[in-house]
Amino acid sequence: MYRIRLESGEQTVFRSAHEMSVAVQTGVVGPSAMVFHTAARRWLPVGQHPDYRAGLAAFGDPSSSGSRARHSSPSIAGESEYDPSSDPTPVSVSHRPTPLDRTRRVRIALRVSLTLAALALGSSGGYHGARLAERWIFGIRYQAPVMTEGMSPAPLPASPALGTPAGPTDYPSPSAPAAVAPLPEPALEPVAEQPTQTTRLSATRNTTPSYFEAYADARAEMEDEFDYIGFRRLFDSPRFSSPDSIRASRRMLAAASNIVAVYRSREVRLEQTYRPDAPEAPGSLRETFEAAQGAAGLLSEVDSLFGVLQSSEGRYSYDDQSVKFVDPAAALAYGALRQDILARIQGWRDLPESSNQVTIPRLLTAVGPGLPPPPAIR
Image (cartoon, rainbow, N blue to C red; front, side, top):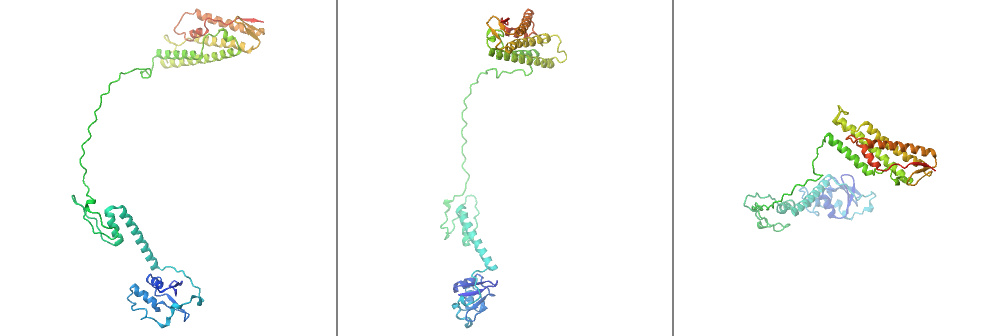
């Protein structure tokens, strides 16, 4: 057993001559290190120890020659009988690597990494990758052959690690692919021409209609909206039969009033678009002011007539002939509205037909042949 104090001041113990020789060869124990002599109980230069000189001789140091026995020194004989417990100085079994030791470790780690990389290259790099792997691992000089047209790589000698390389027949030289005849063009069957069909969706239409076409579209839309709300037979008997039918009649009249108001505003836009300088000039398709006021007046009066019945709910009765009120004031109001409605309808029926009359003929159609039932007092 050897107790060594390294150049850094740290102490370590080597348990055999082999460990001591390895420490000398790797540079852990340098010439400035000290060895503890057990018999003399003091530190001596490590260079005087025969095992240190033997380690240098095994490492190939020319300054140290001869065997351990020939250079043995009696002053440090019996070193192998060292007893660490006899030394009062504490012993540390760890040591700090010297710069030389770290350099060698880096070289070993680098060599191992390069070897692993070479093995990976040999396994995935094909023929030339295997040769490069040999060069890294075994130091074989290798240069990729220069290939010319019509040549194949010459076989290389077998290596102890990779075995016999593949022959030239296993790695044929690349060659241009043979020309392939183009595929024949497929025969296209003639497509029968389909007859052109014109539908409402595909038919073309002038995006800017004429003055007469614009008015015709507006009147047609008003007519469709009247049909949608069921604006007809205003004074039939079922409309007076129950409170629910009276409320439904008033909702229908409110919708009809909105439809007429929309048509009036559309007439104004059409006149401003097509006849901005003379909207009231002869030839205008716009309904007269008197006709517009009369249509609005009729709708308002009919709604008021049903409003009197709704406000008198439970205080009147209807027997298909007349409406009998309990309250004379309600009967009087109902009778006055009925007279105005009848007079207005009769006056329209006596008017000659005109192209400017649009809403009035539609209101007369909605009234039908029936008339509001007369009032009576119970």
